[in-house]
Amino acid sequence: MAKLQLLLLTLFCVFLQLPYSAFGDCTCDTEDEGRDKTQALKYKLAAIASILVAGAIGVCIPILGKTIPALRPEKDIFFIIKAFAAGVILSTGFIHVLPDAFESLTSPCLSDSPWQDFPFTGFVAMVSAIGTLMVDAFATSYYRKSHSNQAAQNGVGDVEMEGEHEGHLHVHTHATHGHAHGSNSFVDNSASSDLIRHRVISQVLELGIVVHSVIIGISLGASESPKTIRPLVAALTFHQFFEGMGLGGCISQAKFQNRAVVVMAMFFSLTTPVGIAIGIGISSVYNENSPNALIFEGIFNAASAGILIYMALVDLLAADFMNPRVQSNARLQIGVNVSLLLGAGLMSLLAKWA
Image 1 (spheres, rainbow, N blue to C red):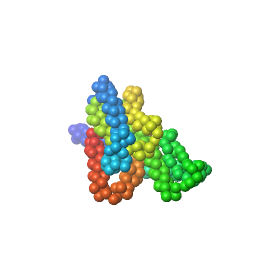
Image 2: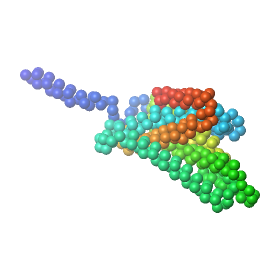
Image 3: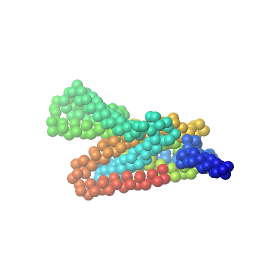
Image 4: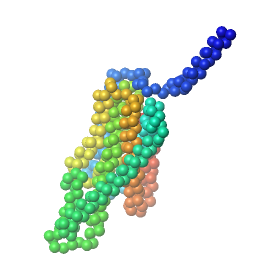
């Protein structure tokens, strides 16, 4: 009888431990396995250098169209490069950023209420995409009205867009010439409208890229595991290079003043390295599995994903794919489609190592 009671007690204890063993791989504590601060720091410093250089080269390639004729926005190769970069940005939103947001906001380390009761990731991404649309529409409307009012005050004539100051449109009229060019009015207005769109697009796109780049940098910098950091260095280097090409294409079309171009290019190139440096500084106190860190990363990643997906589909791909130049050239149309699939596919493969 005593043996039977002992057996039943043993079985009861095993039964009680089953739920805990089922979740044995899920822990909210920092993993100590594979931690090596010295080796990890070497990889982090290498990541700062390689990501900085790759980002700078990527964003500068399309901008160099001013000096390299083949890279100018009116050339066919520019559409192909931009389609490839747009595929990279689209894949970044869907394959890299959004799944990370889902993982953070559905973590068992967060309380069931409200995080497990409502799909916050999809909601935040949706609100972010809608918010991007609103900013896009309102900013474009504001610049157009500002441009029209200034042109009306100065008189009717030729309107020229000049990038004298970053982010602002300066209107120049020839009312004093005493004549009007009616045939050129529509062309001038169309060119002005396109320039406004490109400027708004480039600034909103950079905002979305910067948000997730800083978060990625902080996560990498805070990690103390060389096994985790090593594959990320290569993946993020390629990621930053191709993402930079997409942003650089938008900046090139926006025709900002040189100073504004340099500021935007530097801002993009420095965001991930700065994020890594911040991560290194807070690595001793930062716990990526803490509820506050998970909520912060999850919400900002979801918002960034919404921005990137909207910008890639609406402002980059739709605008170029419906461009009369692409629509009237079957070879170019095939080229941009293949380039898009190639960019999205290669970026998706990097998810294996990221």
